[in-house]
Image (tube, rainbow, N blue to C red; front, side, top):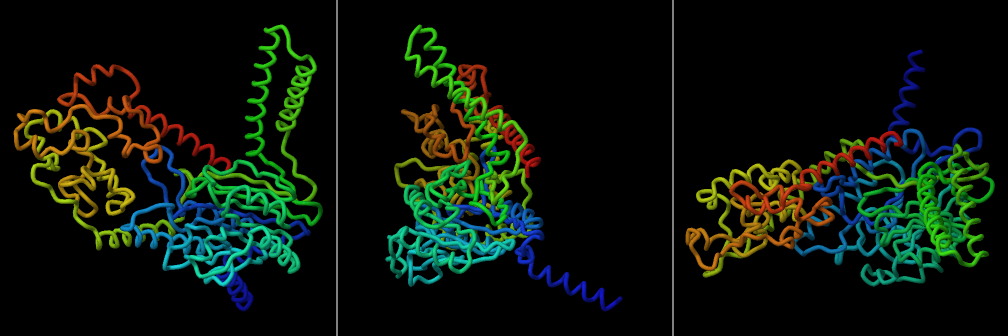
Length: 545
């Protein structure tokens, strides 16, 4: 008995050591299943800016999502390209960006399932070559860390993964290039000859070129990797293949669940998400037709044959909607379902990855502080920033009001998130950032938070003259352009100028202007409503996932 227990323990240990590899075996009964998670254009973003009402993204949440799925289904991860670096940045961010790129490549590889990644312009750093992980690009040869394709067995299905890249990349990495479509055709055929049953192409290229790969090469799925934006909610049929796209920066990751029965072509079986999207489209189309029919009836004319055709279109849409309302039924042959999953705050995080991210923040802070330079010094005769302590003496009521606003705790939110030395964050949480006589990363002591001078301008002259200077050296009215320097859609999705003004002006601080604004929505009410919507969306998503 003891020997049997020892044997079982060894088997369990071996299974644990092999991790997700144990799930690559075929299911009993001939039917095989696998799940493909796909991403693109992460652009060196391990997590989103946390300032929006519903921040989407986070590699720790992606890791948790994948690992949960891998407990019940064999999983393959693919990234279609653009993983490593942002599309634009400043020279001072180079080292921090490299640290993020390395972290992302290694973190994806450590999640567990096999990983294949495409090669895009933002996966290459000049002078450093192609960043981890190894990339697949069938039309790029003689490049370090780049292979033509991969062949994996996932859930008993032989899966071939090839990639195509912009030929212009070759010269920058000491490689040679050829036509992407010709290379994809050749590599797909080679993978088929080696036994690949399912072939996936990673395409960090323009969508028309990705469609050509889908149409001309013997592939089943093409994952778009360039200009993906918010992603494609449904797979697009192109020839015998399907084109899919996730959202950028891990906002919405793609999940394809495949049931492989070894007969017939791969079929898009829709599923609840696709059905819900199609219902919305159908309802809109029916609404447009009804409006048109009503207008033609009111006008008392129109081409009767054309009107009859429109009525037939409407009837067909109604019939299709009725079919969608019926319970979903799986096709008889090989099929897949596809959906995009928003990585919301409501999803759990993988704590190991989250801990690694905190270490990354500390490492980036050290990198940035090591090379941090002070702001441009004050110039004779030119106003500079003095800090709110200089304002409080004369403006006690206004200062008391300001301390109750969110501007007064802007710096704390950075410290709480470990981002106070991150170039991507610090500028909007301090005063006079990058300005003459202002603040810079590592040089923020007296200008932390969004203080008086952010809105009213540098106050040294005003303080020195005790407010008697003529004309005034500071301004009372703050234009919307001052606010939108930080309150962008990406970082402040509920921003409305007048609504937000209602929150930050009041007693001792523009009471007359506040009265003139009158009643109406405030920034607080807009933000609260958006947070409530995000919470509701998250709760609904929990029920699905």
